[in-house]
Structure formats: C-alpha cells, structure tokens
Length: 395
Image (cartoon, rainbow, N blue to C red; front, side):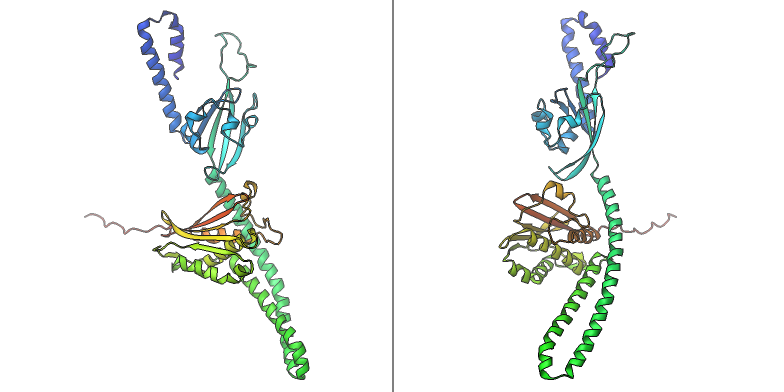
C-alpha cells in the first residue's frame, strides 16, 4: 500500500467528514487490490504468517506449489497447512532462513524458501529506532528450483556414468582374459576326452558341457552389461509399442512362471507407431519388469497398460509390492543404490539413460505398503528442429 497515502490518512483521521469515509475506504480497497494483483502475478510463492505461525496471506503461486486452497488456509497454523515443514524451521526470531525442500504432492518437485522477520517501525520521527522490537510476522518467499536441480543432478549422473563405464570396461577386460583361457583349455580337454573310452566320455562329458555353457553364459552377461551401460546412439525405427511389451513379457515368461506372478495386461488399440531402438527399449522393459518381480512376494500381480498422454505413448507397470518410501524415492536412480540384498543398483539407472536418450520421461507413483507404478513416456514425434528453406532475396 502507498505509505504516503496511509500517512496522510492517519494525519487527517480526526478531521475526516462522514461523507469522505466511503471514498477513503474505496481508495484503501483499491490499493489493497492493486498489491494483491501484483503478488498474484509473481511466479514465486509468497506466504505471510503472524508470530504464532498462523497464515495471514498467501498468493496464487504459493497455493499452487503446495496445492492449497487460499480461503481455507487463512487463519490456520502453518504446520497444519504445510505438513512436513515445521514452523520453527521457517521462523528463527531475528534470523533470515534459506532452505531447500523436496515435495511429493501434488507432484515431485524441489523448492527453495527464503523467510525473514517482518518489523514495523513505530518510533517517533527524530528518535532512535528500536532494534530489539519483536517481529510482527514472517514473510516467506518460495521458488521452484526443480529444473535447475535436475540439470545439476543430470550432470553429476553423467559424470558418474562415465566413471562407471570405464570401471565396467576394465572389469570386463580383466574377466574376459581368464574366460578366454578357460574356454581354450576346455576345448583341449574335450578333444582329449574323445580319444578315451566310452566310460570316461560318459562320466566327464556332461560336466565339461555344463562348464562350457556356464562360461558362455557369463561371457554373454558381461557383453550385455557393457552394451547396456555404454553410451550408444539409438538406432531408431518405427515400432509397434504394444508388440515390444508382448515380446518383453514373453522373454521373461520363465521367471514369471517360477515366481507364480499373475500378469494382467491392458494394451490400448490403435496406438500410433513410435520411433525407438527396439533392443534398448526392451532392455528398459526387462529391467522394470524384473524390478517389479523382486518387489513382490510369490503370487503377486503385475498390471501392464499402454495408452496415449498428449504427444507421448505411455507404458505403465504397476505391482502390488511394498512400494518405496519418500526418502528412498530421491535415491532410486543413483548408481549402486538398492533396497534388495542381491541387487546391483544399476538396473533403473540404465532404464533412465535409455529413456532419456529417446527423449522420454519417467514418472513414479509409490504408496508404501501398496505398490509402485512405473510409467515410461515416449514422444510420438522426435524432439528435433527443422531447417526452413532460405527465402529468396526480393528483386
């Protein structure tokens, strides 16, 4: 509100005529409405609370960030309105406070808030100001820092992934040499075994065959691991997404049967084709499905659905396992982080890399004790620019 107008009003309050009251009240309402329009136009959230922590004002941005109803929030205690953010973390007497937050409702986002005490200078002109007066309230400014934080996390993740790739390549090389040596010696043993009698071939042939098959399997695992974790350029081709889902489920049918998992699929008809690298997307599906299996007890249910969401095709995997806590949700895509005793902590990291290379997104919805829904969104149209033809110069 214009301080000059308010000072003039207070100075004249004793001389105000009854006929002027309506005009002055209208002017006050106009000034108040003008400031509210300015605050509501800001992208930053603004919350004002009294010393006891009761909210006396919040703008539209703050209401949207915390999913609040402004009229229902006014007069309520701060902690009751914004659960999980204690009042003493916002108000520290004389101190200014700045902290980062992670919120999960209405969506997972990162916020930064800056709160400062509000004081009213009620000292008479020409006298020394009272610096020890108690705050009459606190103003809190909230900014959405999701994009900048995620950009930083992506940079850190890229550096981690590069280090991990070098480490994996080194380990694979060190393991590959002994595997090659074992393969050669097994082949020599097989040749010698053919010169022996039938009894010796019967006793030793099967163990040699099993050893040879296990070496091949180990070599395949290392090759697949390196192929999945090394940054590669996807080979895009128009693909039926429903067919990829079916092929992924068929490939894992043995594990599905062993775990007595019931798979309920609802694949939408008439979906447009999407340009993807078939092998990479199926690798992502394998990792998500296996993660769902491991989160459920024997006999669990996995719901698989496909559909459209704007310009994206969506594949959703919903299990009825134990879900993930809010604390672990933030760590889910970190290298080596796992909640399983035998997990490597690399599966979902690889999924996110593949999805991002396709210009897609991942959405998670977890209810602890009730399961997790893992959505993969792939753009129907590639996110690229198109050069326009140069205009011919006018004659």
